[in-house]
Length: 471
Image 1 (cartoon, helix red, strand yellow):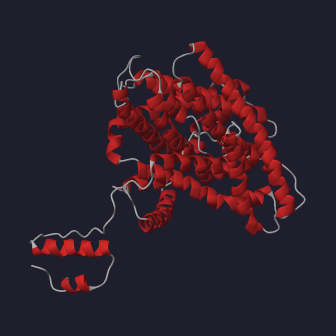
Image 2 (cartoon, rainbow, N blue to C red):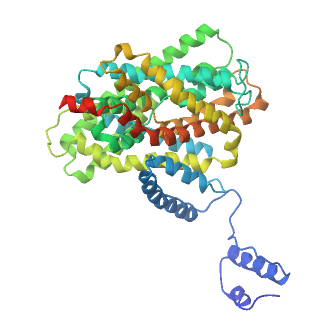
Image 3 (cartoon, rainbow, N blue to C red):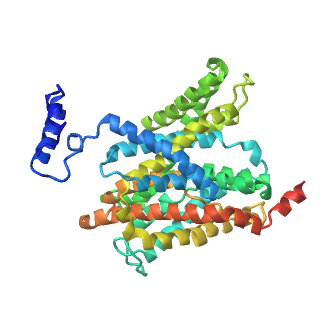
């Protein structure tokens, strides 16, 4: 029986789709249905823009509460945002895979430009060479070590533990490891603020510099691994390696040159065009996007270009004493935080929680291997070149928190796995799902374990004695 009050609704002049929906609801009641169809009409595969806007706005509002709660318990806020995005994972896909890849490239360009702005060369005088060696060499060494471990312990579909050397394809193992090569400067410095007095300023400067420089290094190394593993036949193995190394060096050189050129545009703008602080945000976004876009259009590395542009802007002098690179960096900080949160949210919203379960055992093993083997080994192998003490290096090795960059790179890894040479096409969907699950598990476990224990490790190493001695 039709419930009272519903029939008059059908007499109201409404759009055809809504009117048809109401008629369906009334018909459902008339047939005795217990629960009527209350979902508004949505064309299959299309999510209305107002619904997307409400969803994104509500998610960003929720991240504020999640971030506050995360900081109270000593966990990096971005971990709470990631889990929040996973928890509210919608049944309808809000973004296509191509849109996600474009959003991640856009986000990474801004994050790397800001990383360059945060790199103050003056703060690392006396150990600049070691900082570069640690950042570049650390990414390469830790990725190679971790890739070997993944290859040794992973099952053929990367969905379980199976010891040996004939399990997961070595190319997939190296792709997973390359995604996890870069550390997160924001998360690390966020946690270190809790024990700021217990860590010497020189050591904090080294940690921040290394975390900033290894972002572009990790991105380039993943690109090199993709190039070496996804080329199709026609060339010998040695020829493929030589060609890819040439391309790799060419992209770095072009990115460096274009980044320097664009930085002069930014310097001119700071001196001549910008007249008030409110214009700095617009300038920062413009320079970050231009540096990335021009480099990519000319065959260079957009990420290197964006980082170098920010680095050059930060370490130049300007005629306008009130509008400086430091002010630009502080102005960009909220936008940078929003960009980082967006990366975590997109990943959380794009991954279905049940898809992560098969990769959980291996994810735990890989996370432990990265924290206890790969990262410490990469730092300690370079100890002979370090002007810092062994205790300082132990803290550096424990400061390898992974964050937005590995998650963003995981989308490129997923896109590259189907093109890896020698993989059975039937095994690709499972490998893609489990490889992405491993990266997710490692990032979550790493942020949780090292985020909670980093202040205690800093106190246990008694670095405050060095701080007192320096005073």
